Amino acid sequence: MSAQFVGDWGTTRLRLFRLEDGAVADRRDGLGIGQLTGSPAEALSATLGDWADAARATGLTLCGMAGSRNGLVEAPYVPCPAGFSDWAGKLATTAVDGVAVRIAGGLSGANFAGASDVMRGEETQIFGALSLDPSLGEGRRLLVMPGTHSKWVELDEGRVTRFQTSFTGELFALLRDQSILTRLGSNEGVGEADGEDGFAAGLARIRQTGALIASLFEARAAQLIDGRSRAWATGFLSGLAIGAEVIENLRLAAATPGTTVTLIGAPALGALYTQALAAADCDTILLEGDHCALAGLATLTR
Figure 1 (cartoon, helix red, strand yellow):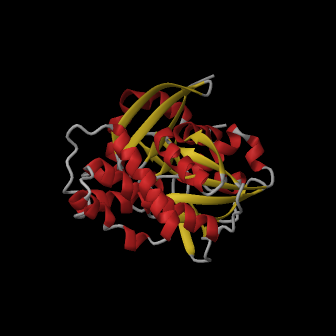
Figure 2 (cartoon, rainbow, N blue to C red):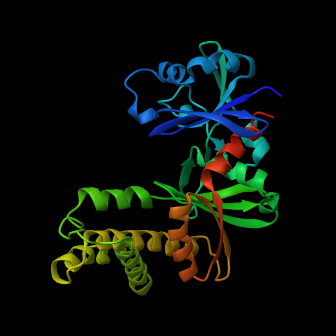
Figure 3 (cartoon, rainbow, N blue to C red):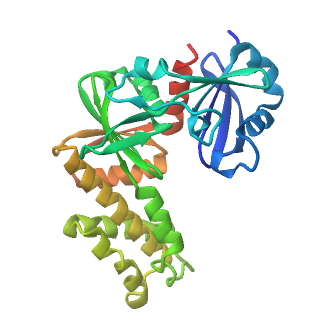
């Protein structure tokens, strides 16, 4: 079987993969769409390099921001409810250096409050997860993809019916890096446990009060008065943000205690969401995000 070429092109990085018999045989990394100074086509060509000859025979399949307005060519959003065939049947196409490029579109639909929402890239993980675990396509399921803009997704018999974006990751980064909330404490002699303790404290606070905005300044006061470290304060903010996301979205999704939530993402971040969901009496199953993305891309090459 000839090699297949696929890639995930996000805002911060480009990852190209050469697949043989469905497994990753090689990988190349390049600049994200948001980092480019030249054209996306030039950047893709440079990253492909000598793979281009083989890719001309099989084509290249991309997901993510490659299909955004700033990407190679805009891939329209597929409206929800949407299943795999709806998504796979609406790929955008272009060519770069003689390589036929197919680009997966994102999804659009209503969020849990009925307002418009979009995703671009996460849908590949969703359909990859369905290919890895077909049982997810049975009945109603709740999926969560933690990240810069976390996605909470409702599935009904394998079709995405609606989803909700939470600004959690970007909000946390802004609070940590650009606010006054973590600038006072020292990290000298501080271990990983300090951040974990801060996360647990933030999670407990948001579950106690439900008041995110009213609780944020506690991170600064704890450094000034209680001698807390910067790592503790950072963990506290993370616990507040993730805890608030979980509380809000379980309520909006009308999820009941005992609901099983499938997490798709990086193990370290998934562990924090597992902790927050456990506090809400929800069980979790964790699927590794990169594996799901590759599986989703692989389904488009068949």
